[in-house]
Image (tube, rainbow, N blue to C red; front, side, top):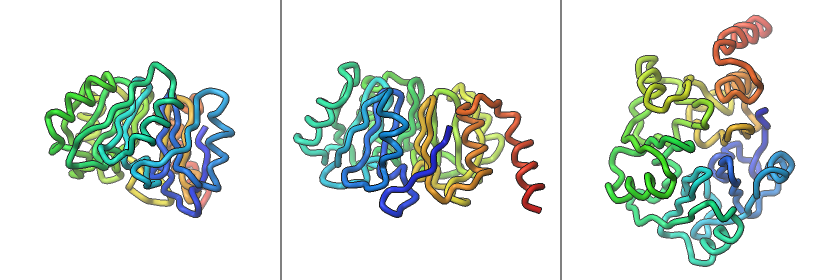
Length: 242
């Protein structure tokens, strides 16, 4: 199921956390992050950390169950702490990349990655090798920051609300998961900032509406429902509010 939460009065929880099927990174000092501990700590490690002294770790890192990539600004101490806290099967590597906000430039599940069209070729190879994924240079709704405007799991994906249906179909066939256009935090199109998700849990900002949560739970198969029920759910919600 999808859990509403905040990070120190901010609904942009995707900025301050990174969730995969093998681990969860949470920025240090968040008073309201007990939701992550409660939902996840029985299954995967929940690690408090910073990157280059900053708490915006969700926007600076990218990872899946096989690996984690950090920007070159991450300190040795931070890298050591993260590496010691993660399962042995997860490879941690720093990336020398001009576009250092990796979380904004890359969206990935355990099999496929979409990346910013201008990322270095070397970075593309590191992503493919470390995370064990196929890599595609792509935009979402004309936006190059694919990590900001898309969220992926192995079950499905949520993309920017202005993504054309034809582009959704193309991306869906590329990623081999169903996609739907939607919003978080009461109409925000910055999906990556307002939502973190893996194959069995999702966390959204506190402003996220019941309809948005319904779409999220259906497309990511968090409630056992099928994507086809989304339209029916939305129609029912609209009728209820009229």
